[in-house]
Image (cartoon, rainbow, N blue to C red; front, side, top):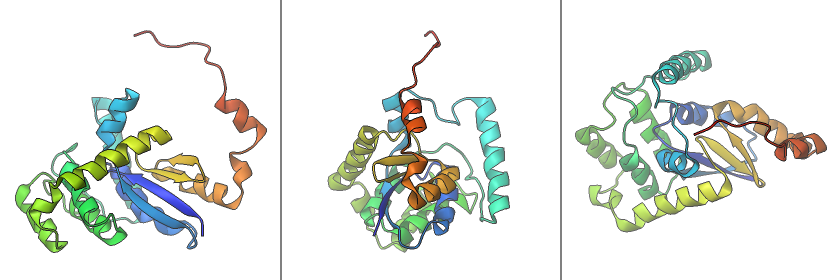
Length: 208
């Protein structure tokens, strides 16, 4: 059985939409859910997130709203965004990063329009998933999230969601078709032209 690692962060609407597209992948593909902290990946690579400058934020929110409708996916932005996803990421880890708890956490954030940072709602979610509140803050849970994120960065992951399959990365909820093509035929990315692109020289760069 072929295996894929799926890197995600609950703060990302694209990760939520990607969750609903996992069913499009072959049934024989085993997917490991791997929570990571998107903000730490941005820091690692010196990037800004799509919500960190106003025009892109506005466009991203519009696009996600439209795309969810197009996909037939229940979707509503939380009351404020971005929000701090650390508690939710740690909750997923406390649940063993299993698919069903991860889906329930995503749904609690991305289908209700409620405040994702509301402590009362988060406590209720913990109770729903059978996780004592103290477990989420346990050092070993925090350590798993840190290690997940560091390992993702070392693998070359720069954004979420990202799939890692056979040492190849596929970034974005819109990469499902690209990943499917690779699973069918590895020469999609393992060919002379792709090797040339992987080492293409830079002819100009921005200052600063």
